[in-house]
Image (cartoon, rainbow, N blue to C red; front, side, top):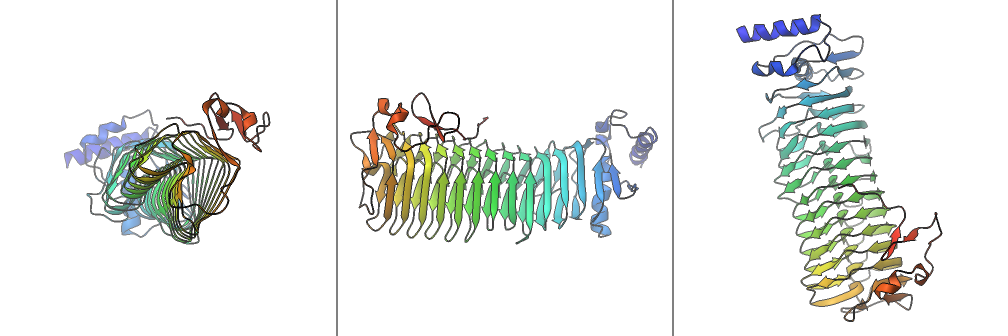
Length: 499
């Protein structure tokens, strides 16, 4: 009782002297139990400045079903939760305004809770702005994120940062566990995760684990290591099942999973549209099957469009491994434009500098793109651009090159541009080139279809250094798609990667 009275006395003094951030050392409360302290609103604004205020907001949502719709909960200064476990906010439909403040030592969950985050359910109209979770541990089961367990509605999240470690079983994200609002929109701007993410199951991402909303991620990044024992794992998004756009997104740390692992997105689900622009991965990506520098797998009936994006991280797996995307599945559409891989791509079967495999009845177009990463393939079907093209796949390559100076360890079906193309595939290759090696033609393997014709050539090292040798390529000074580097052409619009 004495400790509680002492706590209330200090709080009263804090409030009497105006609640200034510098008037009290917030860590002085860490020896006392954190109790709920009522927050008296000023109009529609609830100003919070103490750990007990945040606990009271949570109790309001749980005990009195207050979702703060139309209200603003505003941080006045940093808050230290002293690593004392709290429940969090149950339902929230208002605006959580961080006011550029931080939450320290946030602790939530014991590994069993579902839909766990600072806000368990962020409802339609909810906003989170300008808030950092500076440190802590969030440990749940399914639907786990530092800020939000489940997002359900038209929601905006702007300028938030998570540095706490997040763990769970499935649908685990650095910021959000699950977004589940179908035709409504989740927008995430200028936000990041640098906390370590660990999970036992599927759908895990640096920003969001599982998405079934119209998702827009802009100017956002992950620099936290992601280690899982499951599948559908991405540096930003684990699994997305509806229209999604990533613009100026990046992942900078290692991502480890089983199947469907990508530097930005693990899997683009059935009949999904995924657009990735001006984005990059520099982290190492490791898995078993369907592993890609930017995207692991493009599922049946889905369309993935990648523009002006770069992978520079090393990629490792067993089957269907690509520097940009691992698996373009049957019936899927993949368009890659102005993009590049510079990382080493390592695996056993269907290993490509840009695409691992494009399966039957799929469509693949690659324009003005390049691979300069080496290919290390222990088995068959390895190519500087594509590992394997399956039956009735439609492939068009225009103005692409591979400068892979090593395809170490490959035992069969190795090509300068493609490892193998099925006899029934429809292939068109225009003005494309690969670094010559006596053992590699343009393509080897079971068969080739379509016109792989005369507009593809092997270059030696000196030839690669002269722009005049690249027919019908745009090297216009100051404005062209390409500029000449010291060894080979480079794309003008690729993002700059800060490791």
